[in-house]
Amino acid sequence: MSDPVECHSGFEYAERPIALTWEGQRLEIAAIESTWRIPGGKCFRVSTANGQTFELFYGELYDEWRINPI
Image (cartoon, rainbow, N blue to C red):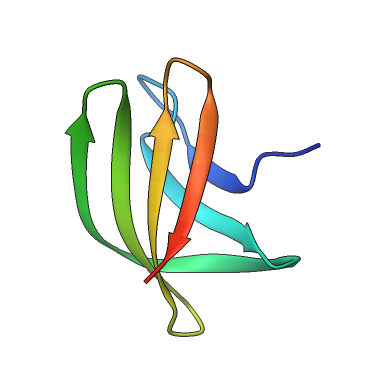
């Protein structure tokens, strides 16, 4: 099974999300509106090319992505 979020990784994993899979569709990320860290992970608020907004959470401990539509 592939990750639900595709990301650019440079110095560390999951530096910048570039696309996500939601309800079976691949959605390209048009803009990263905000980023922040919480204990154990990274969070991103993004908007997709089709105008949807999502909050993405990458849990570093379990190497797991969570996607929440807004």
